[in-house]
Image (cartoon, rainbow, N blue to C red; front, side, top):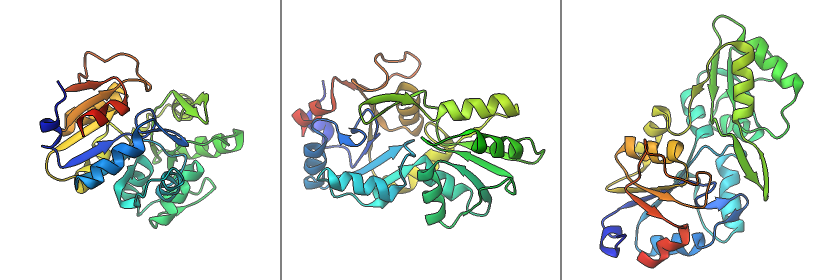
Length: 253
């Protein structure tokens, strides 16, 4: 049973975004109340996501439009991880949100094949020209290939659209190179998350591989939240607890 005394033991509460805390751009039912109660209990709240449609400042603005005051320091995205890892590289980024995060963290970006590094983010305006430039770079012998996510589907403004994986997989197929994953459940993401969490950590997510595997690897207390991307629990990535919905957490705060 999910008990109040169990909740009180945790110092840091980590939430995935899409499918767990929001369906962009709207919060999931109960999310605002949960955030406010946790802050009132003096708990640290962190958001960890492979969401790259916006940079961290854009995520902050979206939260504030929904009535939640969040700072960028509370948010770790795979775009941010890319910026930290590639700060001394000249990068060809795919995706506006990714590009903005890279620029704000001092990473040099270019829009031509002069780069030797391709990083894939979510790009609703991906086209043949971008694919051609990326492929020319990846066909170089010394090129580097990274992706922020392998997501298949994304619920965008109540419409199901292709995830970042459609771009990553296409470039992998054409180039013959495997992209290095920077988002959950990678060690790159874990390294950045470990820098901001403290004490006992509880993690809430809706995807068995991206969330529960990540949380278990980090030795966080993992909670699978139903109603998101994965409808069933993966036997290989079992959570410590299960919630039928995020709102159910309110019963224990």
